[in-house]
Length: 104
Image (tube, rainbow, N blue to C red; front, side):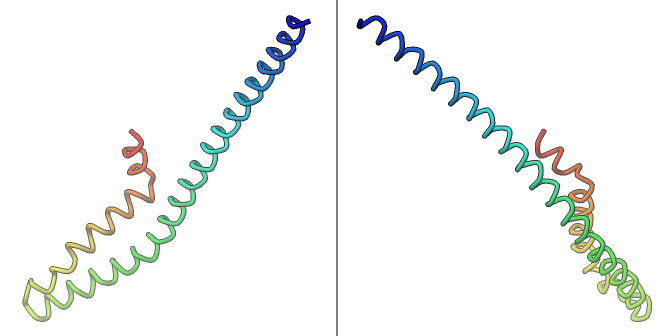
C-alpha cells in the first residue's frame, strides 16, 4: 500500500517539476522577446531623434562657420566640437552598431 502511494507521489512530483521547467522556459522566451522589443524601440527613438538633431547640428554648423568667417574669429567654431560628438554618438546608436558592440 505504501509503495503505491509513494509511486503516485513521485509521479505527481515529476509532473510538477516538468510543468515548472516548461513555465521557466516560457518565461525566458518572453523575457528575451521583451528585451528585443525594448532594444528595437530604443533604436527607433534614436533614429527619430537623429533626424531632428541632425537638422539642428547642420544648421548650427553653417551658422557658426558663417559667424566665424564674418567675425574673423575661429573661437566661434568651438560649439561645433561637442555637438559633433553628440551627433556621432546618436548616429552610431541609431544604426545599431553601438548596441551590437555593447552586447559583444
